[in-house]
Image (tube, rainbow, N blue to C red):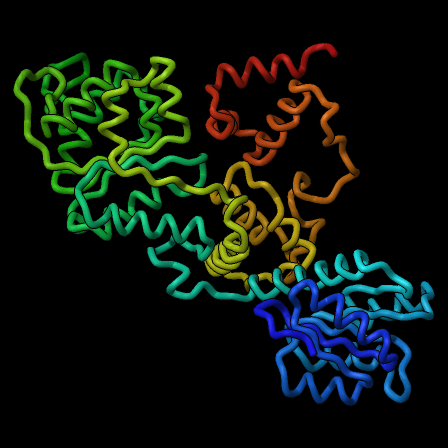
Length: 449
């Protein structure tokens, strides 16, 4: 009798007792909970009484055949995968088994590794299907619009709760598109400052000559075009939180002024010599390695340590496991409702591609892909051919260790550009380089070979 396991439950059906014994022993050794039946009627009784994840059935058995069992499972039971094994393997039999609903088809004799591979594939498809059917529950979405249940995201939730309970400065790190602003908002709206303003500022999106005026405000006549006194973002955020995104893009002179704000809690408007007190919590974010920039001398060490009181790392989407499936479900529902269309379903193979894709643009890229699919695809089911070309299965590529560094770099740049539909600014952010460097690399790639 198989030992109870927390892993998936497998029902093996075969009229040959020696085959049952071998399969039960091998599968149990991998930690699966294995039940056995010597006939289809016995198997049906077990299926009525016990939850089963995978049925492995022989094709030819006295009385009711394995095909009849496959058909019964497919027509009457949800979320059970089926594998067919047979000693009478033919192409016609395999085709019929697959058409009837078997996910895998194994011809006897087969090796242990072939058995384990087939079981893994079948259970992976079941896992993907189940995960895509889950509407994220409250415990998966501790903070509004922040969906996830993976271990890395639970760590983020824990860090948000800690940060929200203090007034300390927070530095949020992580790749572009991982949800750094979402985290900053979650900290603010779960803190005592929630009723005061949350002011997001993209430091990299404001020209250097205007950033000081935008942050600290200016008095009338401070410069050409300053026709009136205007408050800056820090004054607007008084009592609340200011979110300084891409803090690494600030120039050294601005870093000195930000350090003064952190130390003295006051700002000086452009054109004025009189400082003004502000009560503002600073949450900063970057997709670059600030410590590395400190070592290179392009970011002030004292400012780095003043910002780095509480650090929250945003995990890339490729490390968040089934969160991808939860996000697909949420985005598909949202965009379908907005466009007045029914929520599409995704084929198992399409889900597998989306689940295993590396997502260089992270959650932002996933959101854009799902929106495009919902808007553009007319079918109720989204399949692999509907996915962006970069994600589809293609001819095997040379991914070994015999490629040059330049070849690997070229491929990665092309993949990132394709993921953001050719947007060079976004691609440069993801790659961690500036637009000029990206242009030079593209120019080099397009040159004579």
